[in-house]
Length: 373
Image 1 (cartoon, rainbow, N blue to C red):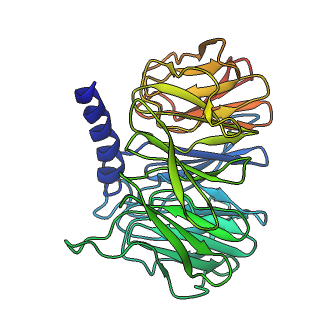
Image 2 (image 1 turned 90 degrees about the horizontal axis):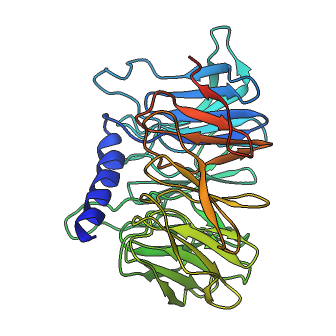
């Protein structure tokens, strides 16, 4: 088990870290207004979900084989005004705001603005709050930008100080907010709370291991986070005081999902968990599936969808009384990204597959794949 754990970790870290400089990284997917937005290595694709037709494609001159290629791997973030915020995780260090309402004749969105005054890779998707964009960078800072023009609203918030070796630790996860504070996790084993109005750090807390996923607010008003220590941690969002509430079988890579009193998440040994924030206990014994779980689950009305590295998507009943393979791909491919719900469709993006993503109905039957053959 130890050997397998470190092999999985090595794969994940090499894909994400090495991928930021050129080779490959798993795709990220979001959706809005009936359109899927796929960040897939050297391009961002906008795809009509109903037809599978590509509406537009965004890439940067220089190309994938250029000397300084772009790398689009972070989840695109769509704003209410139609801006698509796209981080370039390559060495260009550029954050793009694409205007999805302004598409050129050659089917390319116009760039509303860019921001590049950073020293590290963009890995974490930014958080939109009102007219502000909160964008963590791997240089250890979170940048607060005006959504209209991409200008800085203040000096960058120093989230992670330089380590003893002079290297900054990475901020990989999208922040979350309770309306008063912004919470952000770090690979240097810490979680921070930043005041939403003053931008001051109100508290920080040290954990036993790195936290690659984002925190989540539970129905009990508490903040929960999983770490590579294999622990589910609970924080008081006002004070930062915390305790470990449950041990897991292995590293927690992804972000837990809150639904009512329940938190759903998985670990890299393939175990799926359901934790009840009201009782402080598991809802059922953890279920082991057929591969590492790095993605967040997708909670539907009558089931929970859990993606595994093997490429399978499982359907788990809410009470844990049953589970089955909901979708098994007809082609090889690894599955690290969280499935996305759009209306009556579930979108699943694959790495190293014959297609970039597949569109399924709510029964797990294939409607179409992108790109279409």
